[in-house]
Length: 483
Ligand code: COA
Image 1 (cartoon, rainbow, N blue to C red):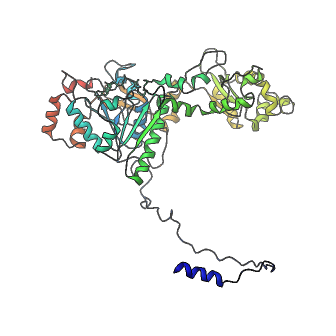
Image 2: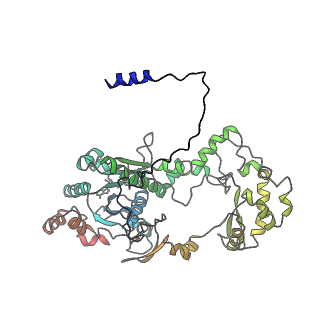
Image 3: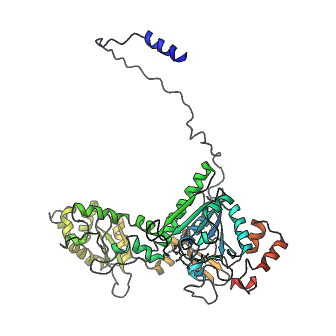
């Protein structure tokens, strides 16, 4: 009926005459009535808090993480989530714990810095995941937590009986996040450490000098880098869960993480098809390019040429260097600074393309100037002129830098067995979620607390669990674990 009525109405309308001249009249448009946009109405969110900044809880408050991680990649991820306010419960093997507790030990009998700097702000519970009672405790934790994070060798979690299907049956809201060396493919079953990932992810082949072997970098882009990727996946999955109500698998392969960080080198690989990479100093030196992205020494990875130059004191101080970028817009200021004002108009130097074949000579000339100043003097002079430079800071200088302490990037914490130590706080600053950087836990320090307060075991249950061997090392009383 309604359809027929619509059709009749359309018929009744006189068809517009094609030949008739159109008189266009401009009418002042009435302003649309002001309706509150959805976002202003809250989009279903609570009213904005009027508590002072930083006093409305932390970003991940209320999120419980079952932290089944060890060594570096996984612990980096869960430490970051702990800094963001999550309750991170680290599960460790009784009597042994995370293997890094004892690796690279500097203080006899105390947890190593390797461990303490990657496990701050967490709680530690010891559980033998292969013991029947241990399995039961673990399953209770699975039911209670929001996220399980692990970075065991491929298949290890399944061998414990914790397949994704089983976990999901116990807790359909659980997010199961894993780091592995490789994604699906020929290497998926391999165990992987940092430098393997740096090599397999394309970083090593593109790092170092052209005439030297591939190099790994000191920054742990395979381990810590992948931990960061995983953390982003976890918070995204937590956000998605607010709509779907269900958890999911989150997977970050170290090879993929490294490649993601080295993506500019895959960019260059594709550019090679269209000619030489003109910003690489080998272009200026007339060295032909091969089939793959070469190592570029200290060349800048972007479009603005740069190099590491010696500064005053370089003969005795291995870190008396500065990174100097000859950004095009401030070329004139650089020429004046280094006493080469004629380069501003000389056609061999005046434009970026003209400079490309002469970069080595240009940087040698700039270095003659930087060698007369300390790296901090160069920094001060150049910054005033907007010339981008970066001093090569040693770890000693970073540890002592007052601004890094003030910002909470470098934090000193106190530890019962090793005393005070420095750790890296949250590198991500949030105005309403202030990081709470606490020391790492001793092995099993919170076992009883978690059994009682988180899992609700009674004192009698706990006594029984203690004697069962599920939370203690074989033949060792529970107390001995913290050694
Ligand atoms: N109770 C009982 N057993 C436990 C346990 C617990 N609480 N925690 C761990 N285990 C067991 C595991 O079940 C596994 O046993 P299985 O091999 O019989 O299944 C065993 O400990 C060892 O785990 P695994 O992960 O194989 O350790 P590893 O020291 O041999 O290998 C890595 C270390 C890092 C090479 C490996 O874990 C790996 O490749 N991880 C993924 C990639 C990664 O994160 N690498 C970077 C590390 S920084």
